[in-house]
Image 1 (cartoon, rainbow, N blue to C red):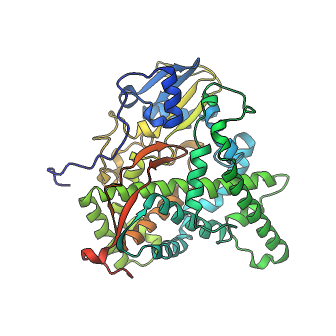
Image 2: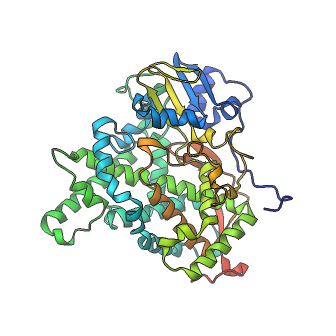
Length: 466
């Protein structure tokens, strides 16, 4: 990038100059937890605090992160507040299960998400992205890209993992996911006060209807596939759904665990990629020189290499833009653990029950770890620069035993989707494009991402039907 051109700095809450009072803390955590952090969270290796008589440690040093999530991971369980938020939605799905249940689920799901297996989904991902483009006329009309990317990744998920046999249309899926996370995917004040789980959370009661919708989808999808496996097994697709159903049994998954894992992937498995795609298109729209590099790369690769299996390796600028967007807006902004036994790291003493936070949100913007941490600078992730980024300072997919099992799937999906979309269209901001990052299950753009979608043929790029 030309030294005279300043990189784009996308919106983010500034560090708080002083700690808020306890009542304001409750309001902030309910409204938007990433607005809570002060300057020490972005400048210190770790910070400690006491909140409602509960000790908390925020780990920012990469070695400390490794200690918590890898080297001594057995000493840490899921934090109570996190489970209070997610378990009502996902129950014993892979994101929330612990102990023997988690081990069974991880073992059952792992074969689907090996890098080699994920490559087998590339053509289906390409077809899904190409068919999705039909919703854009390319005439400069305005679309909510945040909602659109949810629909796109849902379509790809439905086609790749469920062979397009999920019992629901995709038309309003994005809205329902947004509604679910807005009502149930946030911390309730009663969670902070350690109220018993049986006490109703009024903020989540509004989400019961949409949660019931997702549970009904799962039940109907399972029943349809089980009938097919029983009466016409030769025509049953060998996909994620069939694999899970075949894992049932005394040494495998229970019926409830199968259902929980299906809803985890339907309701949440695509959400992280969707949010990252939306933020990528938004950041590129505000960084024209970076967008030109990505567009030129996509045009060249699509002209030379029609096989999407190879796009991830052949599109370093496209991948770098996506990874930089995940740095600035990490799909999972918070990794919460609770210490089982006393632990120590350097001078930090971690008593049993202490909540330990590894926050990709603060880690990815930490002043000791990144140059211009608040700026959108995809060059950090180009192959020649990647070695400078430590393994434990960049955690878009987590790390350790509970690292995201779908990381290879998501990266491939994202590059293919960007390759198709940006080869045909240019996405530009409007006066109404004023997103504010809000932490729910993911980092969502409050207000959506209204963007103008124009055929690139208008700008001298490939024709609309390319």
